[in-house]
Length: 486
Image 1 (tube, rainbow, N blue to C red):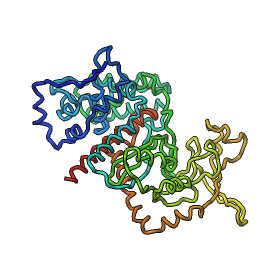
Image 2 (tube, rainbow, N blue to C red):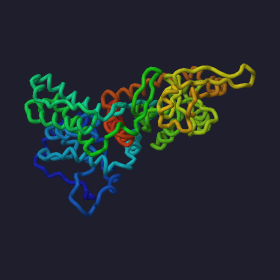
Image 3 (tube, one colour):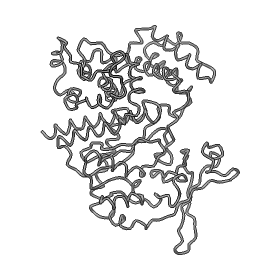
């Protein structure tokens, strides 16, 4: 049960915050910048207002998750820090002497309260609303790109993943006390996940008995990660590798297993829209949706800047129909021709190859077709037929017994003449220089907010991680813009 009204703190110690949390503290600035009651309004339907025990205020629970995103810590560590860090307690609207939540409450809050909340769009909209109210947005340009996030399970089997996490804990322990090797149980010798789970539980138990070691931060952080993973497995959520993650490709030689976040950002470096997808999805297909989402925030847009992945025929036509300049270089092989959506493969611009629905990349390509005038030449992509034979998506894609699997597209290098003329202009070249800004933003998400690896399992978990990370970086950017405007 939650109350319709916010709780008023009556602690005699509240004045401590004025002494220990300075005005320039980031968490204080965020608290003063954002009216978080919009979270309460959005989540009311997920709670009972009349029956049951009093729930931890949803605003506080949301703020815990935001802190987790800002500081890239586990549930246990973020709650533990809120016991003694006064800036955390101030941000969470807690009295200085108030106790903290049980870390398991965060898991329940994520699963029971945030499902279907539309968190990603809601949080981005809120930050752009704040920026517009404070007149911080003057530009009418958006820059688009996609960044990849590796699955938490990184294409390993469940047993391999558990083994890796227990190994990380043991290594941290050995750096403190090598004699602990004699106290750990014998490693699981079977391929059964349950045996590995039992081994991990024993490792956790051994370390927790050695309190002088368990309390050392380097050990404690890795131990908490292992405990979270074991808890997930015990609840039956992760007995297989991440089912939503897919193989994506950065180049012909590098791939990842996970997700993509398609991002639009304005010249003020505020993210105006984001769409989270599985890893094999191509960037260009989400341009129009990113534009619409950005416009829905209240932003005016006249120019869209992106790399060659966004120069497909449909995007060029859409930009022209909506009186937008599309600053994106043409790529001759970006279109799928006349295929139906079900038959389309994804084009990876970095590798210059097509990727099938299972995430496998073509191994070579060749030009085919006749030399006659008015006859379209084709670019044919060849796939590893041995992978096709055992592919779970082979039905309707691979013909049993076939010795090869190809995918061909028409070469239409002169079809977009107007766009080609525009990309050779000085105006195009000048506007294209802004594209570096979004690459820096992607780097900030990954290096400062843990966006390089998925925190949770599944597409919903990735969407939630994206929502909180983008909310955090946008709020920090707004604070910076406000300082610059003074």
